[in-house]
Length: 153
Image (tube, rainbow, N blue to C red; front, side, top):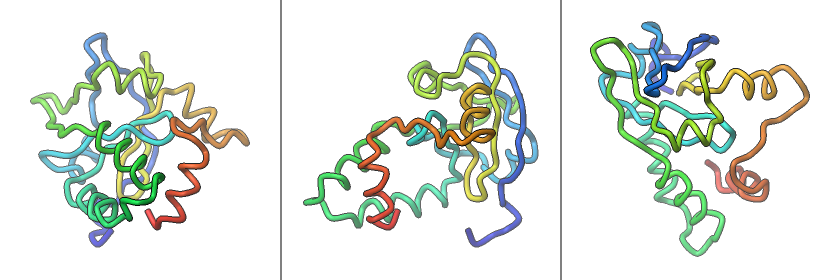
């Protein structure tokens, strides 16, 4: 992350409405920009990436060796679970049902600043992931998570 003025930090508690709309706090909107990417996370969360940050990650994934089955799985996982987003006039995004299902989001959510991105967690999953020895249930195999590190992503 080159520009520390867009560093995402903190926890923000909100509720999602029945239509799947979520207000993005004003302090996070500035760093995300007019358009950003919503990405299904490896853990039971959703990540919001500013265009530039998502572009950096895509470049790394494009450089992965296609002969490596873990690299192909990673690219498929992220490629199939990404959506370009824009805020509505009220500073909200719509989280589609498959994304809500992936993150087990029903009503209460926690938006977490993770330096170069924002993560959206169901309140229940966030408590499990951050307030205990629980390390988060991976949505993909543990082997893939280990290989992601080995691939330099």
